Structures are given as C-alpha cells and as structure tokens.
View 1 (cartoon, helix red, strand yellow):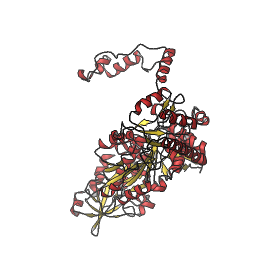
View 2 (cartoon, each protein chain N blue to C red):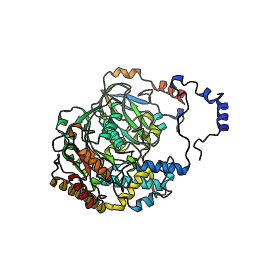
View 3 (tube, each protein chain N blue to C red):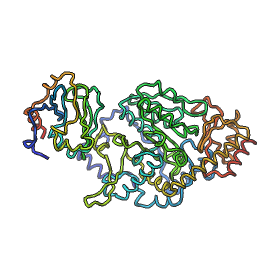
View 4 (cartoon, rainbow over the protein chains, first blue to last red):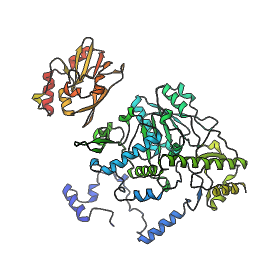
Amino acid sequence: MRYLPHTDEDIAEMLQGIGAASLDDLYVTIPQKCRRGRELDLPAALTEWELDDHMRGLAEKSAVPPEFKVFAGAGSYEHFIPASVHHLLTRSEFVTAYTPYQPEVSQGTLQAIYEYQTLVARLLGMETANASLYDGASALAEALLMAVRITGRNKVAVSSLIHPSYRRVVRTYLESSGHEIVVLPRVENGTTDVSGVREMKDLAAVAIQSPNFFGCIEDLKTAGELAHGEEALFVCAFSEALAYGLLKSPGTQGADIACGEGQSFGIPQSFGGPGLGMFAAKMKYVRNMPGRLVGLSKDMDGKRGFVLTLATREQHIRREKATSNICTNGSLCALAAAMYMASLGGTGMRELARLNRDKAEYLKNRLHKAGFRLPFSAPTFNEFVVEFPPGFESTYNRLLEKKIIAGLSLARWHPELENQYLLCVTEARTRADMDALVREIKS
Amino acid sequence: MKEIDELNLPDDVRYAESHEWARIEGDMVRVGISDYAQDRLGDITFVEFPQLGDVVGKGDQFGTVESTKAVSDLFMPVGGEVAAINTELAESPGLINSDPYGSGWIIEVKADRPEELDSLLTNAGYLELLRGLD
C-alpha cells in the first residue's frame, strides 16, 4: 500500500502550475535553521509478518488483562464488553467514526447519536446531552469554558481530588487563555473541602469529581448549593460512569453540567484511548454547550427525521466565536456506549454497579482485617485507597512477577501519601483473585 | 431577499454601520436591527439578551440573534445601561422579521450620552452604505 497519494508526475505538474522549479524551491521561505538538514533516521521497512512479530513483542511487554489480574483503575476501567456490542459496532454502517458533514442524509448515524444522547441524559439525570467529546478530561475543560461563557466570569474553582490528568488538561485549556483556576483542598475523610467557596468572589464554576480520584463519593448536593449561593455553575465530573448506575445522578444533586469519561461503557482500555467525553447540561444552557447536537424533527410530509440542531453555533459557521473549536465527536465510541447501555438496560446497569461496589467492599474489608489501614473514611464505589507498610515496592514487584498488579501508588501525584495505593475492583475480578491478592500481600 | 430599493428604512431612527437602529423614546433609546439585517439573516429563531442593568459601551456586543443560517452579534449603537428587554421576543423571535422597527425592538438603553445618536447614520446615509455593500 502506498501512503503518499501523489506520484512524481503529480508533484512535477503541481510545481509547474505554481511556478516552482523543485520541492526545495517551494520550501525556500522556511529558514535554514528551522530545517532538519539530514535524512530521517528510520529503520528499514519490515515485511508484514516481521511487523506483526514486532508488534506482538511490544504488546507482550505490557501488563494487561486477561494475563494479568489488574487491581488498578484510576480513570481506565476493566469492564466486560458483551459480544453483542462488538458484533454490532463492527458493522460497516457504523465503523466509519467521523462526524458526517452532510449529516441529514445519514439518518441511521443521526438516530444512533440521538439515542446515545438520550441514554446519557437519563443516566446523569440531565435535560440534554451532546453527541460526545473526546474524553473525560477535555469534557471537563469544555464544561469550565462553557461556565465562563454563561456567567461572564473568569475564575473557576476545581477540586484537588479531580483526576490529576484531567486537571492538567484543564490547566492547558484555561490558563493559556488567561482564566484563573483556584484549587479546592481536601478534608481528612478523602473528599473535597468546599467550605472556601463562600469566600471566593466572582466564580464562574465549582467543579467536583464523584467518585473522586481517591474513589470517595462526594457530597454533591452541598457543593452544588454552595456554588449556586455564589451564582456559579456547579460542574460534576466523573471518570467512572458506571457509578451512576447506583449513585444519585448529578442532575438530582443540582449539577448544571455533568461531564466525564464513558470508557467503562463498552470501550476497550487499549493504552488509555480513545475514550469518550460524556457531556450533559441543563436545557437552559443548551446554546452554550460545546460540540454537536442531534435533534428530532419532522420533515415536510410530517414524518420523523433526525437533524443536527443549533449547528449555527459551530465552528464551520461561527468561526472564532463558536462554542467550541473541537467538535469532532468520537461517534464510534459514543455508539459503543449507546449499545452497551441499551444491552444492560436500567436494571442491568444497577446490578452491575452494585456488583462492582460489593466486590470492592469485599476486598476493602479483607485488607482491613489483614491489618492494613484505610486512610479515608468516606464511602466508595469500586475504588479505594489503602496504606501498605513502608517498603511495599518490593512486594508490589514480586506480585507483578506473579501477574498481579496491586493497584497504583499515589506518591507520584501526592508525595505526602507515601505507601498509599489506589485499588480498583470491577466485575472482572473474582473472589479467588481478591483472596490471592490479600494472601500474597500478607506473605 | 429584498432589493436595496425595496427596503423599509424609516427616517425616525438612526442607523449603525453594524445594522442596528436606535430611536429616542422619552428618556430612553430603543434599539433593534434594520430591515436589511433581518432580511439578510432570514428567519430569526432566538435572541440572546443582556442582563437588565448591564452597562455596555457604544460599539460593544450586547447580545446575539440566531437565524436558521447564522448566529450574529448585536452591538450597542449608543453606550449606556440596559433598562428594558423585549421579552415578547423570547416566545416570538419572528417579530424581528415581521416588524423590525416596531414590535421587533430588542432592548432599551438609558444612554450615557444621548448625543451619541447624532454620530449614527441617517436613513439616507445608511442607504448609501448598503448600496456600497451589495
């Protein structure tokens, strides 16, 4: 297969057309010091079977399920994907992920997105949801920019217990455009200290993640009331969408915007991407919502039809004043999530969420009984923090050799939390897996 | 779309180059968009208003009008405080199309310097501007 679409003849013809003698002549405006000046140092081309071997070798270096029993989540979760989702998703009608640019001829695609939006809005208890964004992190950053647009204010308060990668993306989006970010500290039980919100003037938004990065379930209602008391928008973020199969939805707790990662719903972990940015809001803010939105309408004969709604706010029409300049959604990922949610149904979602929570509680109790401290007392969903004795790294590495990943050390992001590990238990871990983990840690 | 000569450009309002009109009504200045603006935008579907009490300078943005084709910014023909908004437009934004100088008005401004109105175009000056655009 050729990867360069232009033949030598094409190139010669184009150069002649614009009056350049050669490619070098075309690039003459690029200063010499900005040029590489030598050939790229690339290895020789491989045959397909050699490349296959090479890629397999790389894949074998990573510690991934099912070979490894992984007790780490932290934003990427191992959930079973029903065969029906994979089968439907790989149908050729769906597999082209790009947003259609002559959308209304693709009624099937629009209907699928519309159903995805409906399911997301119901899961999160919100009035409207968009066709998705890239991932949880960019969804949160877009939510904060949306709050800035709505309130006309420049400052946002962000919980220190939001996923650290999400906070980095938020900083990239907001700080570079001159917005102020105030970080909310945490209290002893592992949740966000929102008491300071009262003293903060001119806030556009208060953003809390629940369950938060430590797995703890936040008191959204109180945070929302405090935000609204300051006439700021309340943004509820999440990295584990499945939690809302069991927890009260952000909408019922006063969220103006609910946004987060939807990878848990039928999307493979695959090195952490691609993900799915779920984004939902109150209807009164719909005109400020970033991204695409599919609506239901009637054609001139009165028949049901799906349309792109409020497209006049998007970048191809409104240019620099668009609500967002990243509005290619992850349609295929959104579709996977819609199929996953529809496969489980409301009852299935609740049962699966409960199973995750119950299994995580089982491991939590076993570790507690085995003498390990649980530093945070707030209730959790399928992740929790446990403190292991000093020098645990050697145990961790020993377990790794036995193909068990004993969670994730928090010291990388929170140096003061030395020896504290974030553990995750989904439906993919069996009781035998958990008993083996506890046994190995104790020995 | 209307021909330039078919446009309704009354002489009791003044016009901004950004196609808003302004008219003194008692001690307020009433603001809307011209017949040319509504005609070129097409069916208006939504108006985004400022907050009552907002103080906006002459030439600064105070809201948007959304049609089936585009979302366009609205600019203040005179600086001042937003004293009233036409709440009828929330239910019936099409009034801007059917009656742009009457029931389709958008906001009323308590002007800081009502004499700023004199710097705006007369209907003859505005017509000349439009002839240059088309």
